[in-house]
Length: 141
Length: 389
Image (tube, rainbow over all chains, first blue to last red; front, side, top):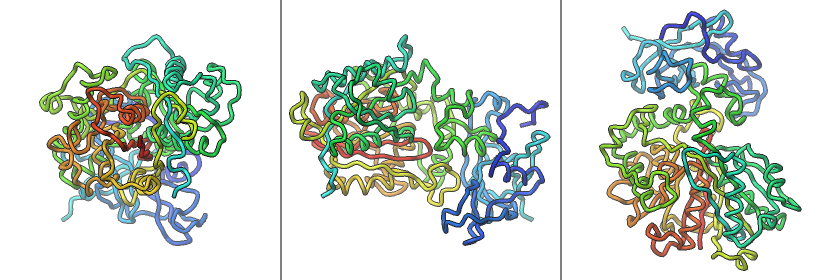
């Protein structure tokens, strides 16, 4: 899973709400939208709150702590630029705040994944402009 | 009584051969299926005055120009992937019931094997992806290497298998039943290629938990359906097949899978009570089901959403031949997307129609009166038609 010298995998656009989300990732901060009307956290980013209808939100800082909710393990190449990563799992992590996101857990092999594995966020600066929020297993003392 | 109940009928069905490899364009395939559907109905293609397209291409205008339709009065599209063909029937039913159009065409065709297949999505990037979910995928999934249906439905299937401890025998029973039925269908791509449990188990993994035979086929071909008002249908060539109940439904949210509070609530969960209420029928009246079978685990989830069994219990429900011809609830009597062909499930509508006309020969469900067809697409949008003779 080493990052290729020249990074050629698909990248987010860095525009609009996605740009805001990934902009915080670039600063190594995991932030999600939190509604200023009802306090609900949300991801993926939205223009308005699906719970209360408010257009007002803040980018609230996540603890970065979560657990494995589900995963999708890719065993044959689907995207050519990810051929060198096969087999890999796109994991759904549920954060303490309740939001869930698609990501990678970088130090757990696909056949070792289980629901509920505790994870912490780590930031992978894949290019000069884009940082992806990934996760690592948290070993409790 | 629901104002749309039994007001529209399927009057014509047409299909091209289902192949891997063709010299014909997508448009050509669709036009040939349309001509066959018109002939089946006893209509001229020029009698078509409404078109609903469940796929972005070709456009309504393209189709009408080729068919020589002199007076196209109604056009619409449904952009919800594999749920679109059945949802398109609802558009068509409303149009003919209200007199907006007389004969509405619903066509699906693509060269999914020879042309840009589903697998091609990952190679071509977000360009051309349906806008309903393309944005979420491009910004939040593709940077992590997820871009094709086998991958995103694996999120749902993995959690499902883990949470309910679903053994291999569950999805296997779905794949084996479909393949068995395909042996009785001369149009089925997998006719002549029976499958054993060992074949199923030993097939390569595509995206866990989906093995090769958990995944639908990629084929070339087209299917077309013509809908007319019930009044008009009685004067046409074939026995009318009534649209007794029809509905579409969507998961919350429809454009993102990970954030769903209720992870196994799919579009069909919402559509089922609506369609059954409209048809004024209970599940025990259903003689057979044609279920959108993009992946076997999804069929299990749909059986639960339909209410045939409780959450997590579908893998037991499908055992011991219950969903095979001769069983309690025959499923995908033509072989489905798994073993007949992939025309986004419009072939399920064609099969249900022929079953209800009692035209299915050795795979005919005896005395079939009521059949259910489901659609499932994009990130889990759903649709459901309750058809009766």
